[in-house]
Amino acid sequence: MHTLLINGEFLKPIVVMEQLEQQDKGTICDFDVEVEEGLLVYKISMVNVETRKMSKYQYRALDGVLLNEKSSAYGSDDIGSVSAAKMLQAKHMTFSALVALAIENQQGYLTQAELDHDLSISYLELKLLNQDSKNTIAFDIETLRPLPLLKWD
Image (tube, rainbow, N blue to C red):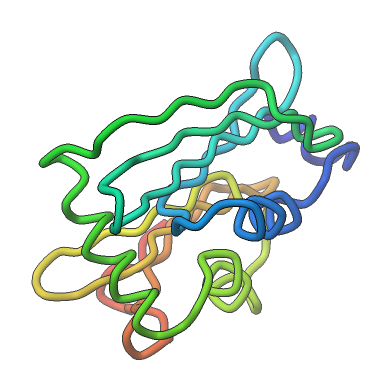
């Protein structure tokens, strides 16, 4: 994956997220980068708290072409993401804006970002990949600051 990311022949994840946010009425709650058949693929999940639906999208990272889309009612295992999405909506903020803020001073390529709610805290968990390591950080949605207790390498 790192080799594909270094080559730089892909749309930045934030661009694809912003395009989806303009097209769909939900809130992105999960983003992953995967390699499928030698190509980078962005997998994005979006929750709509009004309709109680979870939509999942797959985009080709090279050009942002939609490869797959499916939608279903969200379940009890999605409650953490739903709670965090509600907090994000209350802040009148998009997932892409939160991710951009969280990675502003970070090094590496975004490979995963997920909203979660645990211990009464709604946060964004991010994974960044660079040449030397993979870092995971957590970013508090309410305070819009990193959670140092949940920062690890």
